[in-house]
Image (cartoon, rainbow, N blue to C red; front, side, top):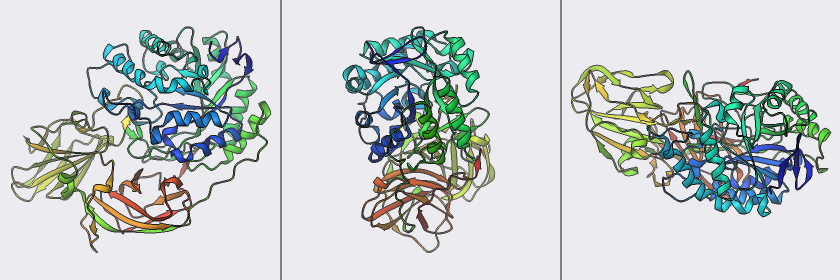
Length: 587
């Protein structure tokens, strides 16, 4: 019998009345050295439960490969820490998670096969899911409530009613969880829309809703869908995520607190999305592609009660007051903001241009036509395509099918233009200085689509490339995942450097590690690492102007900053500051 059961109007935990007051916090978006701190702050706000997705693509990056369960992905350790803090856990293993995460959590080795019907009972898809669950569940079973662990409920799929209506697929997932030893309560979650609830729920499985407002209407729709059972908002949206080129989204703390109060006053259970958003470190952010392709920024702050750096916000204190009206809240004082590194300048006085290094960083793959990233098994990062141009003169470079997602074009290493999926670019005027000039096309994956029918849209050059109508053949293609910049051979920076992609390196001293924010004024676009830890993307397009640097990334003494600048910088300085800048706000 599961630890958590349902009654006609609520939950029982071990036979006693229980209301879920939960908050979302994704372990894979938080440095492991900070998990215990964040979980403690969840309890102090009054939460009795935390919720997390499980990203399949991160845990199984290679088909047929082993399960990755270390570092940011050490889910068993995260579950142990939650239990030690006295928190229960809602586990959402997917296989699809959305989460504004790269590809919605589906592995690129799976989504790059155009013949597989994703999120369906296609046996090629369910077979891959089954093999994944065979790996994932054994190390998690000891952490389920049936074995004395903190996990009291497990989700089946994620907002499936917004995507499809394959009831056999949902049933396959339910049976797969049960067959592999999951005894806990199973639930589905869908937007509080009658059609979504009908398509995404399963008989005998708890149906929950996702919404950020219209509390009474949304709860009424849940009750109309299921005449009895607990009412639960499994994602109470208290903020929102940001896209490059857009505003920084916020939600008024009083407004969000009022919605939470109305939810709890109605007797409903809740999972606050997000309690603590965290960061899309490295190349892990997702993207939305509805009318246009729009990638998500590095920060997943989400205007959550606990800020990206773990500091309580006004929303944290407002929520704590609301929860105290409806449930016990710990008598300990609310947590204070964490220590910050004093402003620290960094001079990046070493440089290594990327294009000449491509051969040293990755052996080329020789192809007649340019392959996609999926063709080469590249999960994320960059792909450099190189060929020669047949003649000299002016003309038009044409990319049939466009690019995915952003391509920088160079002739004899000189930058000549940029094409973006977001703008549907397919052509570029070009002046070729000589026959046999080298054409380089550096393509960046800006993040896999995480919602809707375009999940798995390919990355790279999406068709033949032609100059003045003549298709260019014979390409050397360098996959550049850029997992570790320590292999880059740096030299001194020249006083005046050529524009173009280059790594820059500098060191700085730290007396006592503390949280910081990396500002790169005068830089254009690229990636940053500190001590080999991938902080994520920066882009002067905004809104985000600083990158979060978790304190555990730093060490006493000398530290290293590496920046891959894709365009040009007006200087060689960066600044570690004590204040984040996520951009102009839009409420």
